[in-house]
Structure formats: structure tokens, C-alpha cells
Amino acid sequence: MSHEILENDRQVPSQEPFENAVNWSIFRRRHEAEQYMDRVRLSDGHELIGGHSQDSVGDYWWVGVRVQSVADWGSAQAINKHGRHGD
Image (cartoon, rainbow, N blue to C red; front, side, top):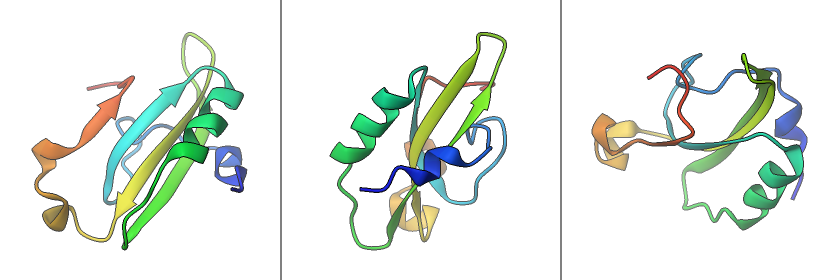
């Protein structure tokens, strides 16, 4: 699996909205984000998203899932965020 999405200079979706992002995890080490990416299994209509940014602690990488429709996912309350920033 390509890890190039981790090159995107983009804050985590709870800081910079990302349309239809429904699940994401944050990592302080890139290799941990890459390992996580390799284990994600996507359903039809789901897309792997991610990026890299910095906060007051230092660099972070994030990996998430984007769906075609949040309504099809369930609801906004069903959105899972791990290592949340700013909520």
C-alpha cells in the first residue's frame, strides 16, 4: 500500500474540516501511521485519507476514512476520532 497520503500537509479533520471524514487516528511517529494504514480494510465507497501537520507537542501524522455520504454511515454522532485535536 502506498503511504504517500501521509505527505499531505493537512491538519487532522477536527482542526481543518475534511468533507465526509468519519474516522481517524493520530500518530506521533510516521512508521506507526504507516503500519496502521496497512491494516485498514475499506468497504465499497470508502476512501483512505491522511496527512501530516504539527501542533504544540510536535509533528503528527493522521490516517482516516472518508465515505461518500455521512448519512449512509449512520450519523454525525457515529463519527469516531482517536487522539482528537480541538473538540
